[in-house]
Length: 224
Image (tube, rainbow, N blue to C red; front, side, top):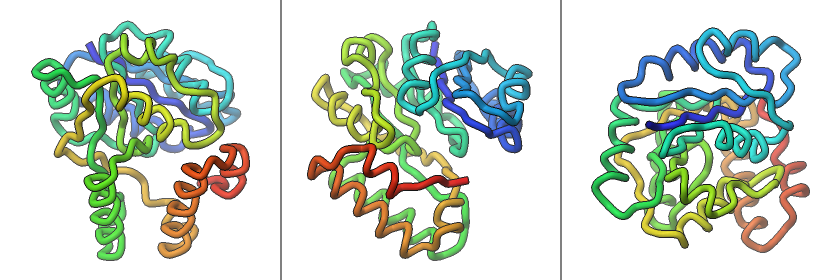
């Protein structure tokens, strides 16, 4: 069974459609929504579709909390603004049952169909192909025993996904499924294409130089 873990915070306006999408997926799975202290009724809406647990605010903390409450042999961490493609869960099961892979991620596609967004999508996937990458909008999945052996996500305000991906890669082979998870383009739409792309590259560069994630979080800002 796959345990789908969704960290959420004040997503009442979108969580219903998100969970309806998740509940339409094929495969054997459970859905665990980890609420980080929403004040807009997100948890009440989510309970109509999934098991809801309360966790300390912070995506890394919330994902660890959801993993601790899970029962599946595979963990799939899904952002509230990301949609999985058809066949996603079956693809994960096949990838991990027929190889020594310990985990992996999907390709990504921005939700806006505009040509500039398609160019960014292509660039992101090319970068991932050349250099690897485990950003959370790619829907990271991992064997539950490997996740626990690695100690889960480190308690970081940002870049917890990249950091975990690096550690997971040392535990065994990782895969990138040819299916594309669709992630919201709202940050690009809100802040502008060029500004957002430059900010993302700068954040990665500074992270790999060792800049503390708390400082990077201030630069990253909020999406909402």
